[in-house]
Image 1 (cartoon, helix red, strand yellow):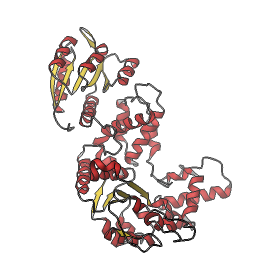
Image 2 (cartoon, rainbow, N blue to C red):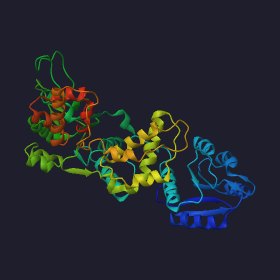
Image 3 (cartoon, one colour):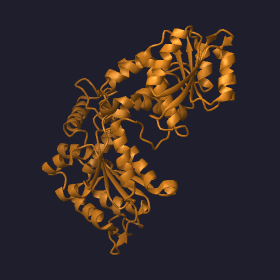
Image 4 (cartoon, rainbow, N blue to C red):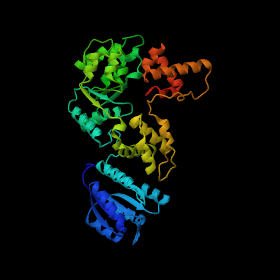
Length: 461
């Protein structure tokens, strides 16, 4: 079902004024409404017709909506049910939520909250099989529709390299996985998807990591090494943080992109790559070229099919759908029943700038879920967390990122120097190592020793 398509809605409530208000809102949202004032009439309605959404009052002349709920779900299993009550009970909300209730609203009803509830329900109707799919971009805003359209177009041409652009946390890896699935369709699960974080590989190992190497190609190469290009053959090679690739290796990548041919390090035989290549960056390629950190010809080669993922603040209309899908995934991960998000918390999230974008949203929800008691009807959410989140790749403030354990004077000086270098280089690990005059591997070891530094070093291994 298209989330903008008309939907059918049954309203079961004996308050004429309240029903009139609900009818107007549902109709404005594209719903076709049928109303009834008691449970007997409701039984007749669901026997005659199937409804996408049922809005059920708890206190009715001939019984309680709470007691009728199980019967309703048996008779109309495809319907999404929203319970409305003037006397909310926590135990009741928990029981209904555990048994598939779509939403639990209280009177007096906030119209904006009700509209949000309807839109969440319609999103679930639009994606009934995979509300928490791990390889779907969530959202129906114009910006996200443009991204989905661009991915579908790109999927038709597997030989074209796709460049994913966007701020940190916007879902570039998710878009790459979605492109992989769209490219190969039902066979996608049988095709390799091989990601490489270009900032995580030492410069001296980059060529053998990417292209592979023959036995004896370098000191210590005691056997043939399969490179990531070979491993991704027939599927998708995803080069994340492409601007972190060593300049010395960029010419070889350019030749590979142009010819789709490569040689193992120390080998002579040409091999052909038969798969899709996707690159991603959160940086300006033109800016990196200007600063001498990226080849201009490689920039042009990568920019044939660019797709920009919008920052969350630029498609905030998708927030509720993202909240629902992300919370579903987290509850599945932790084997938890999904709690509800209170209206005041939703409003606080709407006002937040989300510098860390969708990744920050996920982290906030995961933190909230882990602070929520098992079986609780409502998600425990502390708005203070919003001010402290800043996104995974946000730069630390002056008083942020302090070492967790006491350091001696020399260690503290080293900690601060690394922190400043990472801040100056925007979190780029390889460039920060160059600025400090240490090797990439040395800096990686320091990041393992002091994980607090990862606030300034996004996606450090």
